[in-house]
Length: 119
Image (cartoon, rainbow, N blue to C red; front, side, top):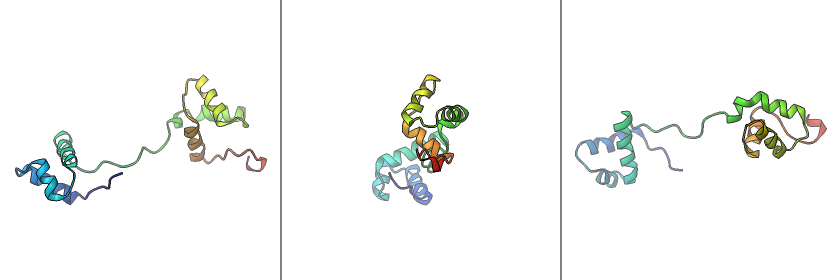
């Protein structure tokens, strides 16, 4: 993943392009990729700014909306595997993966160990 370049560099590059330099020429002059300058310029035209977007994915899970359903299925059969829970959720119309379900349980603080001491 690329690094976020400073707003100072971004503004100097955009300023050079607005001053008459081509996008590829400005990219070579400031040491950034031509596609980066083209993307910054098009973002400025469309949105009015050329700031870096927020990195990473959104907080939360898609399963947060189905929290009560997931927990009710879990309470009904606490010994179910993640694959069995995915199948039970699919019967209810919620399609998900084992890894997504595992991350959901980790986010709410559940450990899905089979030992009695952790229940």
